[in-house]
Amino acid sequence: MRKLAINTFLTVDGVMQAPGGPEEDPTGGFTHGGWSVKYWDDVMGQTMDEFMMRKPSDLLLGRKTYEIFAAYWPHMGDDPTAVVLNKAKKYVASRTLKSVDWKNSQLVKGDVAEEVEKLKREDGPEIQVHGSANLIQTLLKHDLIDEFSMFIFPVVLGTGKKLFDGGAIPASLQLIDSKTSTTGVIIARFRRGGEIGYGSFAKPEPTVDEIQRRERLA
Image (cartoon, rainbow, N blue to C red; front, side, top):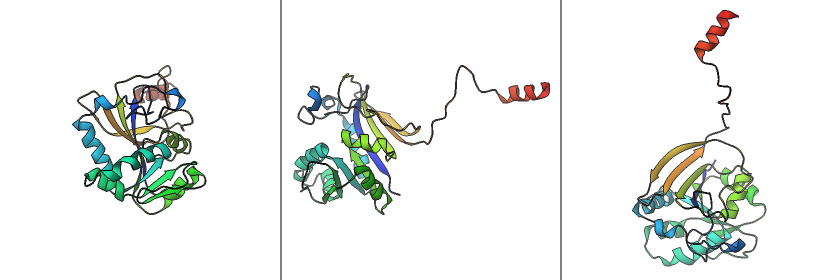
């Protein structure tokens, strides 16, 4: 089974819409585009490079992210990240695009969740999702995400598309790695941790000594 890993920039209140500029995604009257730009530093750049180039991978992208990437990376020459992304196989989830021209790209046709499940069952490298807020909601609802890489910026916006915007299946996560940039961005990587272990502070579980004491008195 292939692993599907997502990489997201988000605010403290969970907004992930248009981090790179006002033109990225103004839908819903969003006026805060570009909120991540002034926080970029070498720590973040190195972490992004590690994520994109840690191993061979395919890309799964929503329409908006695909269009942003396709307008930029093919023109970046011998930049190491550009070389990796241009060479990678790219799957594009869109109901409106009729064709995709970026090298090694193909449209995901039919039901997105079903098609992604098929991709995960195929032999091949890790599947990475960058940005793609709308697509991620579908992946969350169908429990298709195996790993989350989150860049959490010290910003609160109050409005905008959020990473967990409704429909996520309850589950625990296991922290794999975390670090903080020089600008205060928390970079955390989680993988699926199975079911949530519920409990109650109001009625704590009895200790071993308490259980043994009860047994002696019984």
